[in-house]
Length: 239
Length: 57
Image (tube, helix red, strand yellow):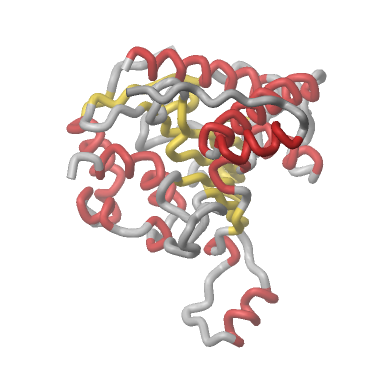
């Protein structure tokens, strides 16, 4: 558990830096280890419990003292991967929330490892949704029309559709989500210097994901490197 | 910062408290698909506790 906690705390520090350098101020993220049959932990804003995740007020762009009108929901369930060398996100949610009391979201990005379709699944569509997906809360006359054409009943709201976004390796990061909120003008502003923080952490995220992709498919990595002129020596087989 | 660990019993109690107004038991809750849940509150709860609660089954 010590290794998991250490990795999760490092992750929590990154989350705090990302949100406090962009939309929030003074937010802290904590780690709650699970003392149960499965070794896992939760990473979420201070004051949260697994059953009640605290929201992060979005204050960037507001006048000093002006109360937040939007909130960021950010929570993760994490564990060590099978090698026990790397932190793996099991489930994550980040969302733009429009009502603090009901925690009603406008848009959210969810990831549910091993419980949804992945782009590299041998058998497609084994699950009802993609593991990494976006859900937008609202209505779409066009999608209602399409459902009607296909005889779907009852008609589902827009938020019931899981729009796939890249799978476990290339799903959007929290940095991507915050950038989306800003570029689409869904938040009032970001703190000065936000670009450097997002770029640095997103670059690290992409490197981690690429390393994980190589671990998952070394043959393709070797093939690509050899095509570029590299000479690869296979590791000795262990007993 | 790391908080005090949460035990399985504590987690079940917390989840049961959230579920009480809905008239759903913890075991019923973890058995359903997340997309069959009717509220965002239950959906968020399911996503955060499912892995911990189902491991005990």
